[in-house]
Each structure stands twice: as structure tokens, then as C-alpha cells.
Amino acid sequence: MTAAEIRRRLMAHADPGSVPILQSFFKTGAGQYGEGDVFVGVRAPAMRNVCRDCRGAGLGAIRTLLRSRVHEERLLALLLLVDTFNHGDQADRRGLYDFYLSQTAFINNWDLVDSSAAPIVGAWLYERSRAPLRRLAKSPSLWERRIAIVATHYFIRRGDLDDTFRIADLLLDDTHDLIHKAVGWMLREAGNRDSAAERRFLKSRYGRMPRTMLRYAIEKFPAAERKKYLQGSVSPGRRKRSARDKP
Image (cartoon, rainbow, N blue to C red; front, side):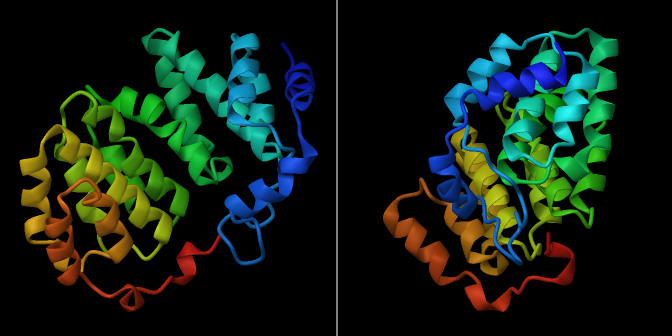
């Protein structure tokens, strides 16, 4: 199936009326992290239906869609890539993992990362060296840093928490709100598996964690405990965005 045919199927579900809402939700205004991103108004359920109908699309079509200026086309490309990865053999998966990391310039919004990092990067690295995650966590790219932490969700689901804590440590002083949210989210997920391990991690770190990161991490703690953690955390104003965090 060609990229043009997949695009036609996707556009059949476009709803122009929802575009302003999506543009606001994904921060496409001047100076925001999604500045200039283009939406056509395809909702997630329809997107997944199109993905199912277009299963088996070749890597050439996926590459074309992933390089589109239209957000939903890039998201569909990633959903198709995940599906292809899931059905591939070891050689296929290695190639798809390498392809994914070569295309991070186009995986440039939080939903694009969150729908693909764990099932591709996390899945490939699960039984391999985690060194690529450390490299990604030190990247100047906001999206590569988010890939690094979100990829560990694959490990968490299998009870392997160590690299979530390691990558969280590397990102503890990150200045971007989207990294604060992602790290806090993964710490919360790790805590769902082992609450004692999460508390050990927080014990010596919560005092300097960005408020948003900490709030996400302790969201499921008892109210009294949350209050104690938040009273000892850094104030939101202490951390400012740096030039590297601009889109």
C-alpha cells in the first residue's frame, strides 16, 4: 500500500472542527514546543482503525508519512512502525530500531514519543545493553530525552526498574516541563510495581526535584505523605527553560 493510499484513508476521518482544540492541546503556538505542527483533526480511535486496515505497509510508505508536516500522518507512521516491529523477526526488528533512532527529528511531539518509544526502543533493548538510553538522555533534543525515559516503560511492565531510576537520575535537573512530566510518570509507574523502591529513590532526591516531576511521581501516595514531599521540594520558579529546550 502506498503512502498516498494510506493518506487518503486517513483523511477520510479528518474533522476540521477539532483542529483548533488539537492545536491548543499540543502547543503549536509561536515559541511553544509544537510550534508550526499541522493537524487535520483525526482522533485516536479512527487512527488505530486506519492502522489496522493498512497493516503491512512497507518501510518506504512509513518513511514518507513520518516525514510529513501533518501530525496525524506522523503518528500513523509510528503506529504502523510499531505494528511492523511487533510482527517482525530479529533481523527486521534490528533494522526498524535503527530506522526509528535515525528519524527522531520527526518524532517531535509527546504523543509521538509516547506511542512508540517503549514498544520499539524499550522492546529492542530489553535483553541488550541499555547504553543507548543513557546517550539519548544526554541529547540536546527534548524528544530524544523523552524517548530515553519513556522507553523504560517496557522494562517496568516486566518488573525491571533499575534503568528507569538510572535515566530519571540523568534527567533530574532537566529544565523542560515535558521531561518533568515524563520522568514523574515513569517513577509513578515504577512505584506501582515496587513502592518501596520508588520511595528509596525519592528519599535523597525529592528535595531538588522540579515540582511537576514530583507531583507526577507521588500522585498515588496518601494525601498526608504527598503533602510532606511537596513541602520539601524546590519551588517551581527555581528552574527555567534553557535555549536547548526550545522547539
